[in-house]
Length: 321
Image 1 (cartoon, rainbow, N blue to C red):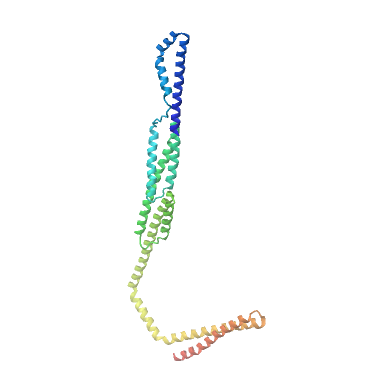
Image 2 (image 1 turned 180 degrees about the vertical axis):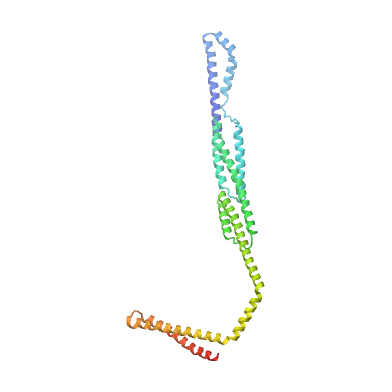
């Protein structure tokens, strides 16, 4: 399109030259009708013989579209070179599996602005390539941050792998997963923030693990020291307890059997009271259904029979002590 416009302009210029030469030649040849001397004078003055020949040659020459090379300014060429480098950076990130959509969007804006300013320069205007250069600079910064954060993620994985085995890294791993997702989505700044939080969290977890281990070790040593200092007293107490048990074993065994007997009798009393209340609710108040009455009566009866079966055995055991 641009070449066609330039060709058209040159064609119009040639037509204008032909028009001017035709007027001059016509004037010279017309002068012969009025005075041959005037024609000779004009031919000597203007070289109209050559003009007439040139006019005939130009008239016979077909009009051609001439394409000329336009030389752009240094700012244009520098911007174009930077755009090409930015495009290569975007392609490199894409091929490396790194998030590149934001960089590609910036490149698209820079490219559109560049070609718009290039058209202004072709038309003789004063272009301004600063916006395109600004976006190219942003692409360079984004590329650097992307590679940096990618390296930080790898270093963080190594840091977690070498962390204290006793540290609770649940919160740290959650932060790493969030940072990885943010990085894949192209939110580089957010990913970097989460990575820093993950480093702080793993350090905190290791500190807590060391603190807990120190307390446990201190408690163990305290108990060990206490036992080492008082083992004789514990030995004497244990021996005394064993001796007391052998001396008073009958009394102890009787007390245990008596306590068990009293517990069963109390349980039996409670169950019998509950059974009486159930019968009262069923026969007098009519507030209990037949099914509930039968189920509870059977259950209470089983408990009472079990108690009655244990009481004679406890009495026999008491006699044997």
